[in-house]
Image 1 (spheres, rainbow, N blue to C red):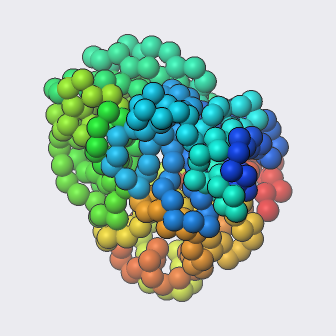
Image 2: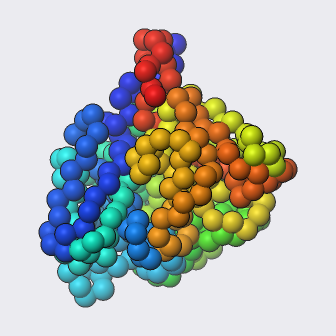
Image 3: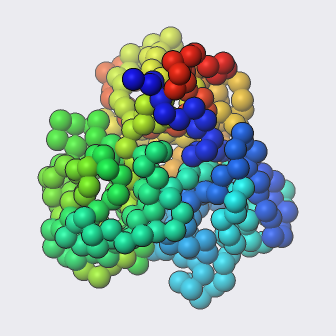
Length: 353
């Protein structure tokens, strides 16, 4: 059996760095492949600005902030024009002059994922959803309308999701996160992407029901399933050699824990689940060499900080400090996407570093 079916991860995920020009700004991805992204996450690196998340299912002109509970803003929503993203392009995306990450003198980063382009109707659940899905990459974007009662919703992946990130579009609500490694009963637990809070118990988000290969179940909590509320869900299932959704335990040592992913990570997010702490975002692009010390967070608007947290290597990452991401006995979750597999589909080790 092949170690991976994805020899070139840049078909499905890329990081791009850019400089603001205070005008219409076409950002071209510079990876090995042209890719038209379906989910773009943008953050200004040198300024205190929100994380902006846009996707092709909601439309280029509409955005959400991962660090805030705000309802969706943008074109046709808040009375303004397309004041952030103008378009998803065959080789990247175009920013509007009004985007704060596109201000003169601003430096920015864009993390880009490929789903399935235009959304299609999915009737696998008790509620019909609109889904853009890429089963090869294990990623789907699901738009749905809440019912106010327990219901199931199709996600299109054809495999059980390891990670789901949900946001109410039509009103203020937290970003609810399901990660299947947090507990023996993960559907009874939750984290908030916009918060430093530790893992908590609650049955009414996911109704104490694990997602299946075709649907996820939502309970009666209004933040995830309010009657007539519009919502978006980003769903991921692990693909060997391309994506990894896991957990590790801190050892409290400067010679910290090594986490095996099976690929050279291009992007890593880590969160302690036993403690109040930021979600930490690292990528291979912003520094390009070890120690990887350029850190951003999904839950705040802070500019890029320099912290010597980890080395990124050909088959995973290694924590380099005794605190924050490596407190003795604390548990951490992570999700990561590949720059290059450690071994390709022919079983040949790649020159990943």
